[in-house]
Length: 219
Image (cartoon, rainbow, N blue to C red; front, side):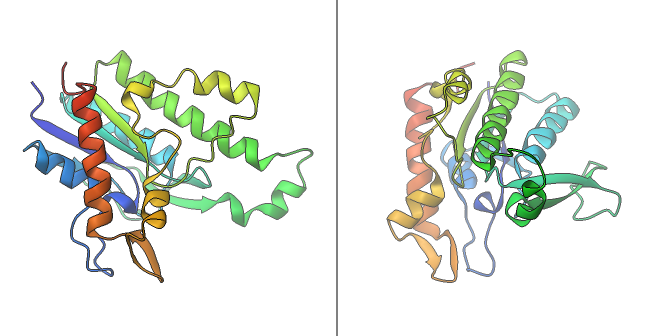
């Protein structure tokens, strides 16, 4: 029986004090199912950190928690640090992040580097990495995009990997909460495009229905 929820993602799964938003989608989902939760989401961090810290947490706790994974932008690239930057309680590894958009000059020095394919492949491999870990360890889960995933299905090789993604565990796999929020004007302000409370509530409602429809809590 599931008695706990694990959440990982970026700032889209944290409170937003500057925007005066004290809720987020993962919390709303956990509250709906009346479950306590652990949240390892961190603002500005990327998918490598999400994959790695999720596996670290499950290996350490051996807990039968339901996982909510909110993927962030594949433009973000994490690296481990030796300076103790923003530590995660219970773990020794700390992280910082750089963006591929800041490295255009580096890319120009590498023959034929295709950033569109790079971001798409990176995203697909992140999804499959964690999906396979969950399935091997019989961990119930749901995934969704917080920020756009930039998956390019006009490339046949990318389609091969996309076809391996379990869509029964992936809510709105070709959309993101950020795009939903922007389309429906559910962001905090013109200076802060994070979801407002209603943006979190409406997105979470869709995830909840998806979980129930696919019986993802059944283990």
